[in-house]
Length: 230
Image 1: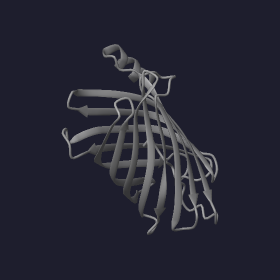
Image 2: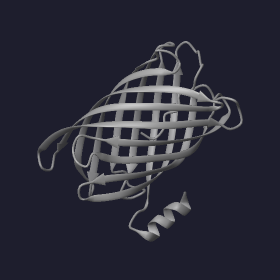
Image 3: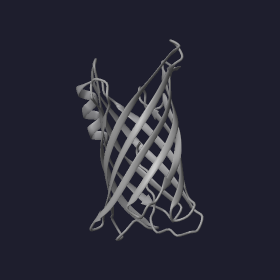
């Protein structure tokens, strides 16, 4: 990751930024779950956060392979240490999971409605966006992700929308993680993000650190939820 970021920096003005996340998953029973995520990013400078997210929602397990989810979140962006953009976002998503040997494959489709407010200009706006993510998780030292398991994971996600350019973003993640016990896991990885705009394209590079907590009311522990860069 350091070699990639150093090469990118030497070729352009791109640099390595930080992407930090902590999440809490509450499993009420085999069907219902609630989710909360706190996130910060330093897009312009590695040590100076200039973007945050607070989001969550409720999911329902139709079975072990199918889960619809409804979510809501607040997102803030700073420029030159001043609050630049506020966003309220609501979304519907569907996750279909399957197994290929030891590999767990997750297909996630999401439809978002986004409401923006720019306080410096006192301007409001809104738009829609649609996302598809293909994610893979492979346990290393065990047959499945359970306590004391190392795992590797990766995903690629595309973002599209109704306004030009239609293709908004492509995000790729690759990382390694560890499931400490039934309640806690962590993930460390690299995120590459290509953004497409009418004025030009840019690449973002992130060092990702995630810490995830799970509370299972009935202690089924049939599966372990591993949220990743979102």
